[in-house]
Length: 183
Image (cartoon, rainbow, N blue to C red; front, side, top):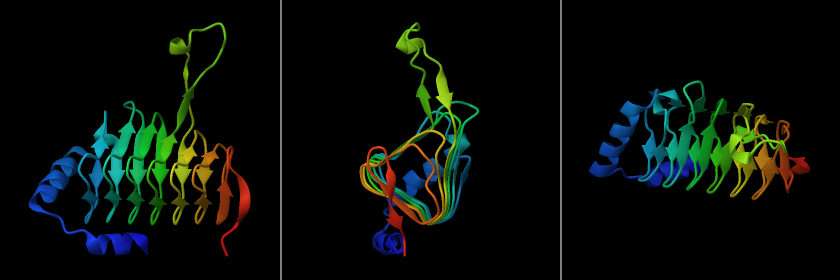
């Protein structure tokens, strides 16, 4: 398992332990055995973030509940890759044993586009994102509002996912389409 292999090589320094301790006390829930690399950011409402046991959040990742009614939850044994952005205006939940690669973008909202209203005055349209257990989201994928990615699914690198992904389904492309199923 990639997370277990990665964990074997993590040797927290005193600075790492201090950073982890400081972040843990700001979060709503934070499990045991977590590791947050430097420059991982927990923004705006960190008390609305729940992190399970043995989670790894790599450098440059940004996790942000954007308002007081939003939430982000990350399950046990999940890894969040370098420079991955998770921005929730409503709710983003990520299951257990997931691998989120670098430069992935999860956002549960977008803006209206009515032509009679200025773009900066458009409403924010939200719908939760749910990611099941044992999911791999490859580098550069984008998961858009209202999507459920079921257990065991694989999202190919660079995919833009705007529709639900079935259990053990592999999808890719822009927009993401069915490729096959895990065997």
